[in-house]
Length: 578
Ligand SMILES: *[C@@H]1O[C@H](CO)[C@@H](O)[C@H](O)[C@H]1NC(C)=O
Ligand SMILES: *[C@@H]1O[C@H](CO)[C@@H](O)[C@H](O)[C@H]1NC(C)=O
Ligand SMILES: *[C@@H]1O[C@H](CO)[C@@H](O)[C@H](O)[C@H]1NC(C)=O
Ligand SMILES: *[C@@H]1O[C@H](CO)[C@@H](O)[C@H](O)[C@H]1NC(C)=O
Ligand SMILES: *[C@@H]1O[C@H](CO)[C@@H](O)[C@H](O)[C@H]1NC(C)=O
Ligand SMILES: *[C@@H]1O[C@H](CO)[C@@H](O)[C@H](O)[C@H]1NC(C)=O
Ligand SMILES: *[C@@H]1O[C@H](CO)[C@@H](O)[C@H](O)[C@H]1NC(C)=O
Ligand SMILES: *[C@@H]1O[C@H](CO)[C@@H](O)[C@H](O)[C@H]1NC(C)=O
Ligand SMILES: *[C@@H]1O[C@H](CO)[C@@H](O)[C@H](O)[C@H]1NC(C)=O
Image (cartoon, rainbow, N blue to C red):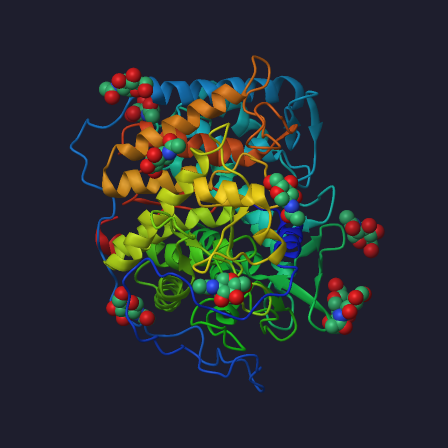
């Protein structure tokens, strides 16, 4: 998940604007328990429980279950399954893309490939370098890594060129620093390959950045404010206006709040400074003891009141604004199965996954081979829409379903990964769009005007979806590639490698000799380039592709856990031999 915070809020507004019918029925694809599990915190819908926040005895002293030790990666016979031709082709694409960035924009945040001009839109710390370095490390591009390390050691993380949003600071910068430190200190490359001071600087820079982000938690609920002013070292709130009553709140969103626990746990473990873990636990208490209770157990909304820690909306789903909060609940447990707090996060993730099977995993009309995860509108009604960000769920459900040994969850992961692949191989570019809708079990769409749109009808008849207005772009999205990568590494089935190879070839086809893999504005209009090449293209797209073809022991899932920006960190699972 890579969505910038403002993009997240805008997306929510675009997609969930209309008022919906209240039916919550649909076609359920997966066999699941017929009885709903009891909510963790029972409460009547749309009523806030007054008094102290329900997370009274948090963080817990005791875990809810004994730690799980289980291998999730398929036991590939040694020396099999890599394809050097394919891996080399991805490495070559990294080098070509990097060379263009380095020639025109070295040290800037991102390159605009159409004009070879530069953008400093992610605080001016050189996002492409910090986000992209661990991919270069994994690919053994030593000359590039040497230059990146020297640059990173000199970044001044005490000043910024704009307000800093904690979300991007954590997933791109902190994640990139921690991951490259872990990779370079765990024997992946021979000792002495790189300047030792530069390697150590990765961790000291991570600590400096982490310390500078702490001010955002200085709020009544402990939830992070959306922004930080690095000049005054103060938190700056984002606002959310409830469309149902026009009341404006100081608010944060669920993805922003829930997408730091993994990095903060790792930072505490590497530095011995527990303050990061404590801040993250306090945040998580607001999320996994939701007040008021969500429509369905575990399926929390996307907006939170920064003062009370209460949820402000009843939307649900795995889409932008919520996505990586779910991702981190299970990954934090996977990171450290012995953590008592993480065992509660795992339980909440299971609630959400079970409710997803029960209520929002749906087939589009007349396409039983496809399974989508529907989002809800702010009132908690099904919207029969999904965005690309939610496509990470395939891999996340596979990881958790496999680790916890829960076949229904695992099977949903496979179904979602397959359906997200289907968004790619049905467009004219073989690349997937930002968001789409479908006709539900009674052949109707969320927005009644879509029911009579003949071109939507034709699209849906053939493919099972229609691309909703304004959502046709492929903005270097990594999520489907990510889920395909997990499906390959967990099932061992090489058909998934072929899917990622097809996507790689589509990216190459969409490039020109001078523009390596610019995003495109319409997936059905080849070469309709958008200029800005996002840093997560280097961090995520190229790394997930490369790891789909390299030796499967490179960044083995049993030893590493990826943050939401594809930065692998070593697990803290010593009890399990990791
Ligand atoms: C989730 O569903 C599985 C069956 O698929 C069931 O065994 C488990 O108890 C459920 N857990 C919760 C917390 O709902
Ligand atoms: C590796 O991939 C290339 C390109 O798709 C293919 O031609 C070749 O057969 C593959 N090699 C193996 C050993 O699978
Ligand atoms: C930070 O706060 C100072 C003092 O209020 C203000 O002058 C400056 O514009 C703020 N910085 C940003 C990036 O908003
Ligand atoms: C990178 O280099 C190391 C040491 O030289 C080697 O063990 C490893 O297999 C290489 N990795 C890749 C992906 O080429
Ligand atoms: C909202 O946050 C701003 C600071 O970002 C603060 O000045 C204001 O008082 C807050 N309002 C409420 C209602 O909490
Ligand atoms: C909220 O404000 C908008 C315009 O500012 C208005 O159209 C709408 O009716 C208001 N909604 C409610 C529930 O008051
Ligand atoms: C797309 O891929 C799926 C497998 O996920 C396959 O069943 C389907 O036939 C492919 N569709 C096209 C148009 O290639
Ligand atoms: C499909 O959507 C329509 C319009 O929102 C709704 O009235 C109907 O109940 C839904 N049907 C199913 C099976 O969910
Ligand atoms: C109907 O479909 C066309 C083509 O996909 C699209 O451009 C148009 O915006 C749609 N109309 C409405 C009202 O959504």
